[in-house]
Image (cartoon, rainbow, N blue to C red; front, top):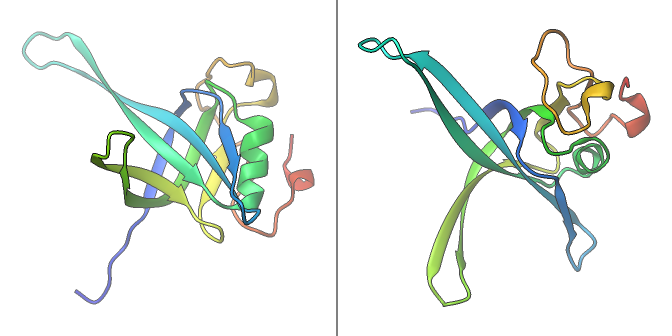
Length: 147
């Protein structure tokens, strides 16, 4: 194989308010979780079925952290592009644990708010048109977000 690709695209609803932490070197990380769901009809019973998956997100891009901090709340519908990363850590009992999360790096990744400004109160809306706000790179500032 000549190369490989590690890219994740998710559209889902934020399951809790964002959490922003600062490191001793001044850098920040924003953690959030989104839920994606899939619905289908069971072929034998005709019953409607649903499966929900929860995804941990870590954002290291300063501009995207500002957007998440100011506009993302529980229930906000998001479009995310990042990459999968698994990290290893030890819990309080000394057990080795692994966590896999979608990471939006400092110079890569995309975060698009799919809810309208009036729908940011915690309830989720359905996506019916273009995104109302986005920040996909380091050359957009908060003032450029079309709210």
